[in-house]
View 1 (cartoon, rainbow, N blue to C red):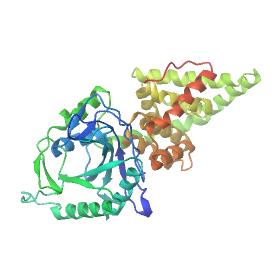
View 2 (cartoon, helix red, strand yellow; view 1 turned 180 degrees about the horizontal axis):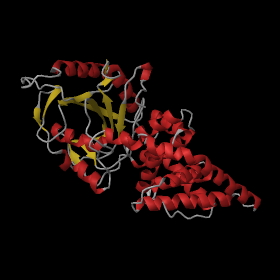
View 3 (tube, rainbow, N blue to C red; view 1 turned 180 degrees about the vertical axis):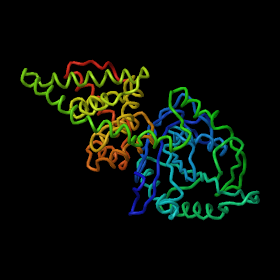
View 4 (cartoon, rainbow, N blue to C red; view 1 turned 90 degrees about the vertical axis):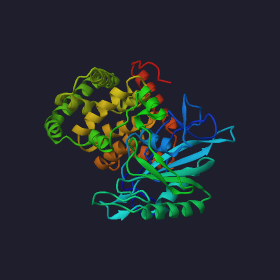
Length: 419
């Protein structure tokens, strides 16, 4: 995903979406709603009224909510918030999607272009009736107008960001999209100064992001707000030592699996193998949930089990069940320990689960790992395409329902999906 861009330009971006009807005028930010990584386009989301909304007519309050909306504090980024009119209201708007762009690509050799951002935003806005968009520049090198840094070092004058935002406003206008406001902040931390880059000249300080209503709601819902994006990449980074140990015994695990399948066929019940393999995977997920760490032989046996189509298809159901977090933990462990198609399979399951439950940044990183391991992996390709065309996460829940059906066909009751 990081190297995808419209018209061949390289520009990584990540997106999140949420729907919320504000209590009064101004903009409302949802305390819940899916978040997804997008390539050329971010999906739009439900506009159901959330359990709580926060007013962001104060830009500082909006900026403080950004880390919760995208899952981590952005650095050297442009964050664009796509708004649309709140259904049945004339005095407010909801945040429909949040998209993060890196300000620099290719190790700092290329700067983010307004045209790339505008094309992505225009594709997002094509799905729903959009009111306008907002933009936040987060860059530790930024210097507030009228102030000078007291220490020497790399810095960016205000002009650079104002030029980017002005160009973005013009590009968006050609798509009949209004830029309602834009602000800059060096880092999203308490008491950091923010200032306007577009529109009315305003300045202020950022309240504590940890106490924003969005962050508190995410914590109460069990969602994790990570300290940085690197924490996400570490979840799927290859553990070379474990990978080599698993590779040394994987062929033996596969041979054992083939023998089990052959015995089931000879008994006239091929599905017995799938049922046994599925039982093993579910048992290991339960162990993971209780804090037991996977051993190398178990990882190899899990890789063999997931090569069975019925077992893999059943795993979709876990993304909408009570054990989604435990399953994701296991998919991440397998992603770090496996190679090739097996790594892609685990990473794609992690990406699917994250996509469906609303963790966009994790979904994007997992799918990137899957496609790096196997560029032709069907599930990862499907999910990537879903992100590009803006498919809503709830539409992908159909795969989860098919997982329940597959388990039922094998004689295993997974219970009911979470609401």
